[in-house]
Image (tube, rainbow, N blue to C red; front, side, top):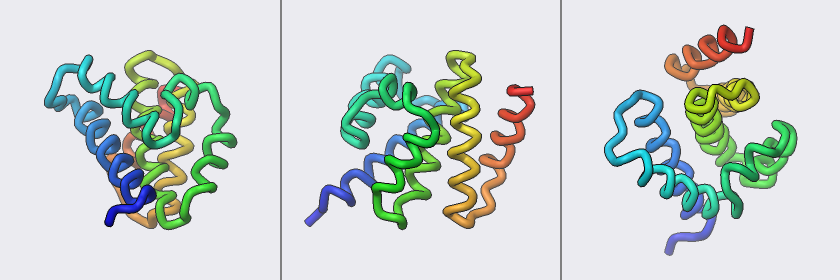
Length: 130
C-alpha cells in the first residue's frame, strides 16, 4: 500500500524529472500542458501553487522542507532548485535564481552527491546575479 508520504515523494520526483527536461530544452509535451501539470503537482506536494510558494522567503521554504522526513529533504531541495531555476530563467527573475542557488546548494549538502549539472547551474546563477 502506498502511503501519502511515498505518493508525495513520487510526485516530487516526477516534477523534478519534468523540470530537468525543460531545463535541458527537451520538453515532451506542449509547455501549456506542462504548466497545468506543474500547478497540479505543486498543489499536491505543497497544498498551494507556485505563486504562493515563490512569495515565501528562502527561510520559510526551508522550514516547510524541514517539516518533512529528513531522508526526503534532498528530493525536495533538488525539485525546488529546478523549479526556481526554470522559472528564474523563463521570467528573468533574479530572486528566483537566488532561491534556486540556495536550494541547489542545500541539495548538494544533503545528498552528498557530486552532481556536475547542478554545480554548473550554481556557477551560471552566480554569474547572472553579479
